[in-house]
Structure formats: C-alpha cells, structure tokens
Length: 149
Image 1 (tube, rainbow, N blue to C red):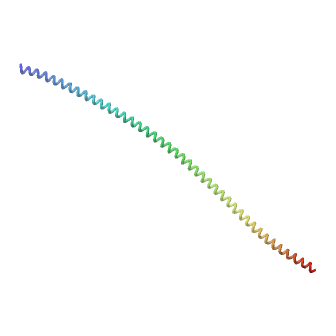
Image 2: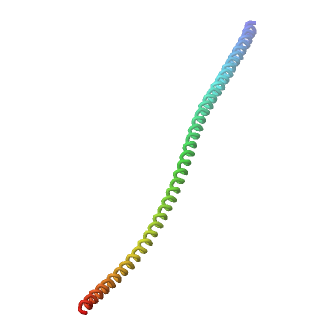
Image 3: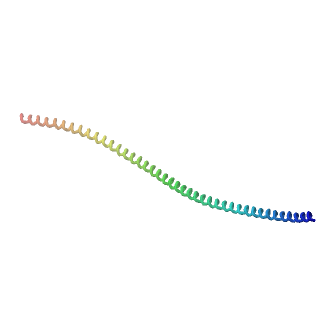
C-alpha cells in the first residue's frame, strides 16, 4: 500500500504538474497572442504614421511642383512676350532703316538734280557774262565810232 499509495500520490502529482504545465502553456500562448496582437497593433500604427507622413510629404511635393509649373508657365509667357517685342522692335528698326534709306536716296537724287541745275546755271551765267562783255565791247566801239563820226 505504501508503494501503491505513493504511486497514487505520484499520479496525482503528475496530473497536477500536467495541469500546471497546461496552465503555463495556456498562459504563455495567451501572452504570445497578446504580444502578437500588440505587435500587430504597433505595426498598424507605424504603417498609419508612415502613410500619414508620406501623404503629407506627397502633398507638399505636389504643391511645390504646382508652384514650379506656374513659375515655368509665367516665365514662358514672359519669354514669348519678350520675343514678340524683340520682333516688333526689329521690324520697326527695319522700317526705320528703309525709311531713312529712302529719304537718303531721295536726298541724293535731289542733290544731284540741284548740282545739275547749278552747273547749268553757272554755264548760263558764264554765257550771259560773256555775251554781256561782248555787248559792252560792241557798245563801247559803237560809242567810239559815233564819236569819231
């Protein structure tokens, strides 16, 4: 009975140890599940924070890109405006040059005409002076001939 009693008592102790072991396993499994759940919650929080940060950064970059695109559009408009003004200035300059060249040509033509008229007038004056001198000589000779007669 003593050995059997101990054995019965040992079986009770083994059963108790098995129950404690099962409770310990259940407690560890529960802690493991809780740790796993906590880790998953933490991971979800980290992902949410990362997504929020990324969304914020994406929004800021989009805003910067939009500003840069607006700046580029404005610069292109200004460049187009400046090119148009340059073209207008070139056209005006060409028109002015053409007008000046035309006036210069007309002036040269008028100067040539005046020079021709002047040379013709000088020739006419020379002829008139020569004729005047001839007539004055004739008049003087006629005056002498009349005085002698």
